[in-house]
Length: 408
Ligand SMILES: [Zn+2]
Image 1: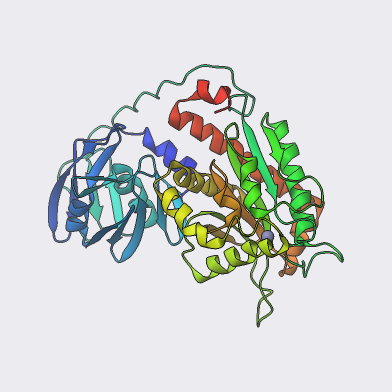
Image 2: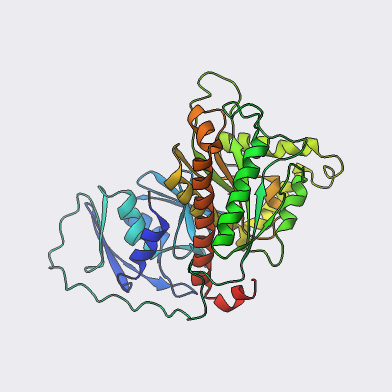
């Protein structure tokens, strides 16, 4: 799987050419590149699909491209794509210009050759994209081009963690009070989901403070905060919202086998399992008394439509990708990926918001990992590192160091 750092490192290796050659067994074709509004090199999706075979479909704010029967989804304008139910970052987003869909050149130069190394190759020196089976190019490879100059970084004060001071993050330990969350089948006796989310949430707070990031907690004790109110802890001066949960499965044959972490950002649930997790976490409204009417789940659709056109969705997806990457580095269970689902807890956050399911209490190994101090410390450090690396990336991308120092 492609790590965001690996992608970023490749970006500066070669300046983009003005056109590339696409060579397949069926022949060669030249595709011109054009710059998008932000200067990122782009090429036409229909040109690419015409050369490689496949299909392009745009519906609403999403574009779906099939290449070699592999479907890729792009949220227009958002610097990521979804493949295999995972969100993967890009340097630029797909754009629609006068009915033509343009894809970031990076998708062709780096993503396809990495995902399908046995089928596609991109030779940056020759600006040549080759499908397996294509006749070799006759020209010798030119001298490697000199690396592009690193983009100017402003030299303001930075913390040892690399980010600027002044960030504030909201940490939301899931459930609490009369809402115990899941019963914690393989947790020590008397420990429920609400206890573990709080323990780890407090550790994340400590880790973030150590990295120079201020933290606001939705709760620091065993109390119930209404789902619809949790997001409001992250408003104007808050950079992002991270909700912490523990997954579980209902009793059925083999149900203790599922293990590992997954990270959600707010969008319509795409799979039955994502719907199940969203249902489970949204259930907490039944413990609330007054707030239920104010936040009916039927309102979600409306909020989703609004969010799809909204930068928070993009940012949330990028944040989710960082969080999931880092969790995977320390977790003893499986990497279950970045997913989309409609969580009420995320709808009221006005900032990038993600929900991390740190593991399964219905799996013995995960149960141990999630409740032992060493495992909790690893998870907390991974989450704090993910937050810092997202903030760092955000500062770089928006070049808004001065703004964020003022508490963007
Ligand atoms: Zn939960």
